[in-house]
Image (cartoon, rainbow, N blue to C red; front, side, top):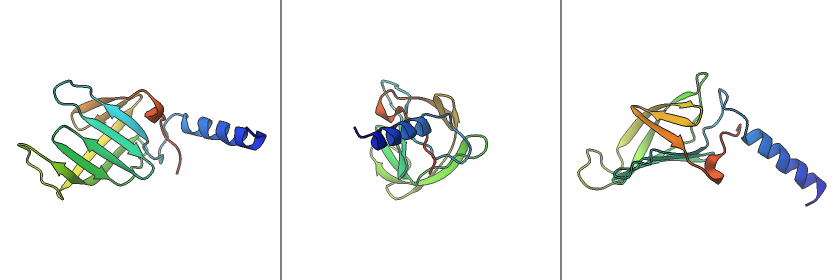
Length: 123
């Protein structure tokens, strides 16, 4: 690696592993790992998704407020089985980051291990 690329890599690692701060984009993957009905939430700089065995919802990028909370409205992209939503329906969520946990309504998800475990990068 060239010295310049090493510096850039170190800066990115430091910036992306810093604790969450107000105004940051929510980035990472969380899951409840419930064997019978797993809920997954994945957030990237270009958008977020909430998936269950029966539904999938797509959101725009999510910014955290001054309490590390957020509100977002997405669109249902998949709905199968006996669910009360249909593809195209709007789907509002309210959440908050608490350390390694992501609280979505009454559900608490935990950060998934791996490369998507990066907390947040400022936009």
